[in-house]
Image (cartoon, rainbow, N blue to C red; front, side, top):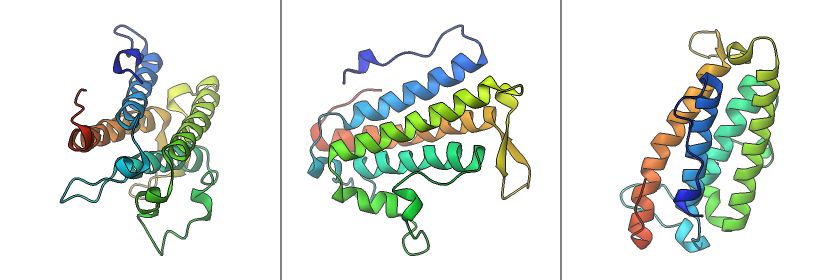
Length: 178
């Protein structure tokens, strides 16, 4: 993947186009950061952190499923996350990625994004649009999240992890860039 092929968020788009544009930009930034790496390279760590690029990709697939399928939609996690005993290993997404090939991780990530996008499309087609409330409320306030809040949170989640990805990728093969 070439970083110049990433779609840029609209400069003067409406709120929906801007939010989705930034989310898609960050999703593609992660795809770029893992592109062309071997399974061993995707499992490489940058001390003292235990993060890996493969683990990050699997983690963000889980985050997509969690926020859109579970919280917003009220459903269950997508496979394989639906069968994990999270009480045994809270970091299963990060830890188990070392066993996955780059192709498996990319397919899982792309499936999570596609499922999330379908849920976003359905919510935006409804009468509340960005104000669509989540089925599952915040465990802190007891109030539902809005789709707007979830989209902004996802942009933040990706931006933070893409910063980590920059450092890990540079330590693997020297590749740098936004």
